[in-house]
Amino acid sequence: ITTLDEVSQVRAILKEVSKELCDAGCDFEREPELGLMVEIPSVAILADHFVQHADFLSIGTNDLIQYALAVERDNEFVAYLYQPLNPAVLRLLHQVAEAGKQYGKPIAVCGDMASNPLFVPLFVGLGISELSCSPRAIPLVKETLRALDARECEQLVKGLLEMTCHRTIERALVAFVNERLPELEPLIVAEAALADQASSPEPLHEPGPSVS
Image (cartoon, rainbow, N blue to C red; front, side, top):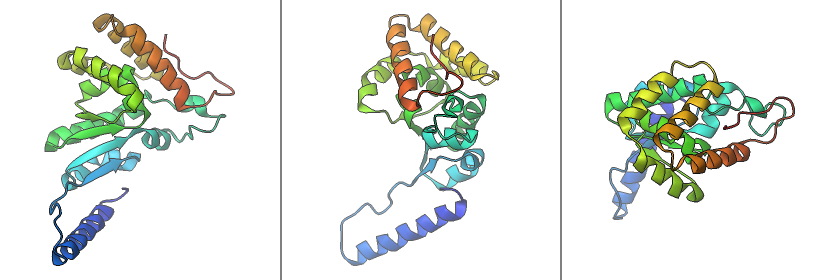
């Protein structure tokens, strides 16, 4: 989705198809929920408008990061600039999450970020209601979620949003996990390192962010 006009078109198509099914005597969900993918910065910026026309929003982090930072993550020459924790990306995530809270709509996150356990405190603090993870990541992400305190995560996010460097944000997340979840910290850091390697190729010029 890129414009509100597209949302209106989708609504019209749903209404038309619903009438066809009704005329055919089919049994179907007459008012299916309509969710919108937030994958480009313009939609994230106007999330408070888009969310009013949907039942929920789902943030597609892979594309959102690429378009926000003008970086093709599969391009080895600029791979190091693909930064999930870039302050601009965090501001966009926060903006969408706040729109969901304002209008009482659930906000989900999908893409590589959702499967990285190091980012779970960030999502909890933002108020994200659902994470769409890869099957391999589910056990550790669930265990991390159970061990976190939402209020502590909210305080963490307030500090993260004031930071101006993705490496500083990453170190703050690692420190938070080390302090609050010492038993899980080795697993979380190890899995986060694997997630970083999988999300982008080895850069040719500058090393990408590492978890240490």
